[in-house]
Length: 199
Image (cartoon, rainbow, N blue to C red; front, side, top):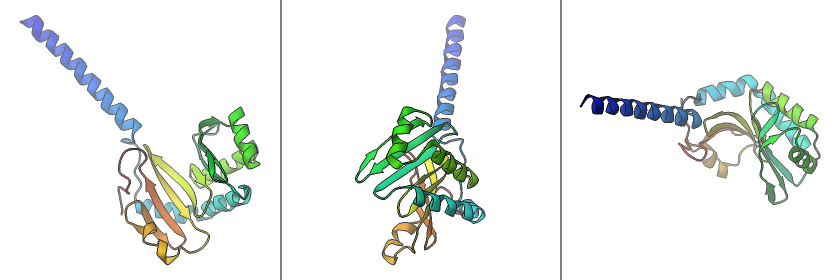
């Protein structure tokens, strides 16, 4: 009987350990330990880094050729986690591209960019404490990630038309700060698609 009890306790202990390891990995992989930003924190960051945010937008508008678009997010100084390049209506979708790789060279060539262009863009994003940017109207500047979710700033050239204001101020995915600036939260493949903290 003692042998059976001893074996049961060992198996129970191993099972419990595996469960905690699984929960820890799940939480770490899907944002359980990442920071969730409140709407107030995002507004404060915008006010503090407004000049740097508009500098990113203006630089991107200057370097993206007509008829082309880019969605880029840096993982670090050596890797672009997201590097999607649009030419007319087709997109070349790429993940985890090393900056000094042949693939990066091909994408840069499509845009007429160099690695120096990427480095300047990365420096501008770092000054704004942001991680990525997408061209277009609005220009979307990616602030930070929380697990698979992402907090972004949508910066418009012109005031948002009245007909679009309800869509850009839905109290869930979008929070309109003013008629040229909108906060956005995208939850990624899983999780809430709405801001967690509306305060």
